Amino acid sequence: MCFISSSTLKIDLSNTGGKMKRNIDAQNLAEILRKKSVDLKNKVCLMANLKGTKQEKDLSLPVNCRGFGRIHHFQLTPDPSWISDPLPMLPTSKYLGIPQEEIIQAQVFQLAACNFRCWYCFVDFDLLSANLKHSSFITANELFGYILEEKVESRVIDLSGGQPDIVPEYPLWFLQARQEMGLEKEYLWQILF
Ligand code: SF4
Image (cartoon, rainbow, N blue to C red):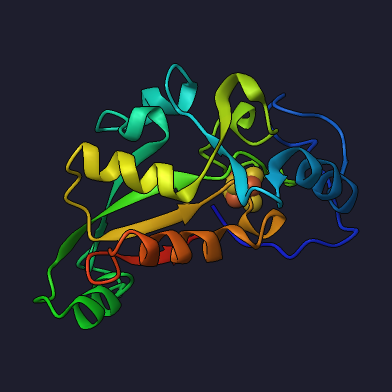
């Protein structure tokens, strides 16, 4: 996932190998998807469920949290011939007061909407279009509940896309849920775009 600021940018997707052969109006699509993806009154947003999707087939570990989650391993030095990447290992060890490790496991959740269609995206586009076949409105508290229920050992909650800036409120709801459930000393969180 990546961050591209929403604007009236139009993306030419003509070289996407037949995935999509038209321009999209990213600003207009963001507005449409936001309406479909968030319920501000109930502080809930549309989260992707990976069960039975093309993305599930790409994963090296089974989906978890009733299909809403997946595990990702971050590595400090993924390639010895390249620079090391300290995120999220360094802030995690500092925040949680634990030894820094070469590899850290993150619990990932994906917002089910994105107003871009990057040719290199590894997320099934069905998981980016607020498609209710592959997503549900679910609260941060419910997702934390699944983590606890399944005894997931991750120390990082990774909020991913989709395009998180379509619903910029939802990281705050996760922070609030973490506090309400007394998990502030258990999980660091980060947003990956
Ligand atoms: S299409 Fe995929 S890679 Fe591009 S911004 Fe959306 S989620 Fe990220």
